[in-house]
Length: 258
Image (tube, rainbow, N blue to C red; front, side, top):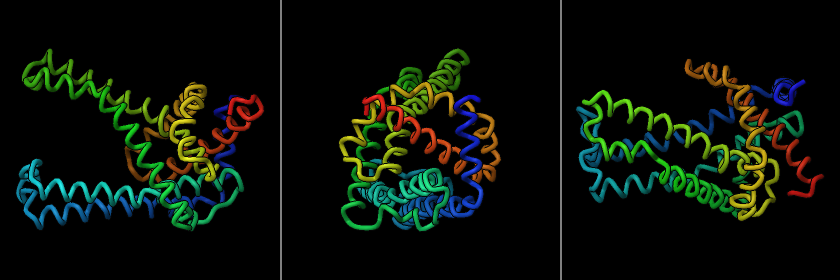
């Protein structure tokens, strides 16, 4: 039996009796981020930073606009431990075979744990943003070919660059975010530096395994186009990811590489 098939089978078994809690944890996390975005929109409208008719920003260089967006970024960062809490819910499902919706608030239990999680999320986000910003080929070509929309040849090049940029984002997630977030959920006592930078080697070593695992979920990811299946697919994928990360951690520990 292929490793990916075994991992997915274990994930399906673990989901039994835990799906409601996982969906609830995912819902709480999603609602917090949506609420933050809605509050930003309300303030942008109240301060007339957005055109009510077109929905477009009046001026992105306006100081008020910058302050509102900056405060929203801070707010997102402050509620981000809920996302780690969702991963913790998935980790408990994989490790214990059971979870509780209250696990989503795991990283809010104590100022030390909370601010440690916020800092980890901040550093991981900055690392991801720098790498994807530098390798954003779509932006470069849009600047070089400003009339791409009116020129079929240039438009094809811009579209190809957009696809390549999308691939860069996926690769950056796989190499810089996936395993640090999974391992932090499994080992919450890991240090900040180890989580942000020390797992990079682990991510590169096991990139092929993650690629195969994600590839095996391709059909499930495609179903998320219809939105509702995501309620099953997201917990299914992350519980499977926890099983995979847990197994790889054991292999590296035995091999003395972690």
